[in-house]
Image (cartoon, rainbow, N blue to C red; front, top):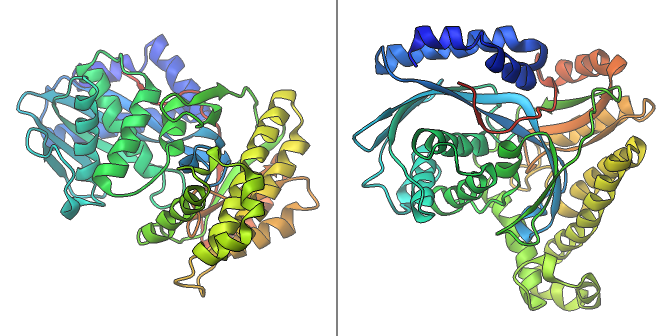
Length: 426
């Protein structure tokens, strides 16, 4: 499909229905965004190519803060911010991706087939890791050119990196595997890529939430076959908006902070004879606190205790959403945030205690929403970036004004939950 055919296809009934499902009342502006990206592709990689259009949403973690890497439960949702790509195959085994605002990545997939520590932390490593994962699972890979643009804010806790990984898998899936690779399988390969090639010991929640679509409860007790359940609850119809506040902090230099969380939790688990806390009896940890704190320090013990409480809380909140009990769900949101602040301790980095934008945003959210029936918590991995709040529709503008005044114009981002995950649009 060339550029002219794409413009016609975007107006077809089937594609229009898909665009409405993922973008709601913003279809016109998003269609213009796709066509502008197609123009960029032609300028970058030449006219007349057989192009396809792909979309992968960002995600918002709704509950289960730092539980996935210890095989716990989470609730997450795809959101209406996404990364889109216009891509076309090529025959020489080279992948070229030009992402708006970043230098072009060029990866020879016949050469870059194993992790290279010198390339840890680069987007090229994620591309190579996805290809290596596809190959290891017996799927086909091949070269392609792609231009991407994203409104999933980098470093915002909305999983821009997971969306990028899933996007590479999404393109490989449709260009070379007839779309037969399941989105959950793509998410698993994205985690492999980030762990082994990018050098970040992340869990699987971000990748699954970006790939799956809608609100999902995910149980990672068996990480080879996570149990994923759609929770059909419409936050907007219930009278609330899910708002993210970007405090201006960035996740770029916080890998040691993130890595310490699963490492400390797993150190406690190993002392109890298991690899992860999901396989540990909470009572045995409580009975051995004196020894554990002597071995690993108080923070490791507190993080383990956060895991046990948070894992139960996710189940209770999932039950609340199934039954439509929004107040009980909101109580869990607030409790999750307090546990993250007090016990998980991921609201600011101890390396720079003078910068506590998340702490300040949480305080302002509580002051504004406590009397209005809303809820608030730290969002995503923490340490910097964003907080999350459920704001009554009538109070959104007031909330936005407060947050924008402190953190800058546009810091408060009202979101919609997107029902579709990683897809090929055209």
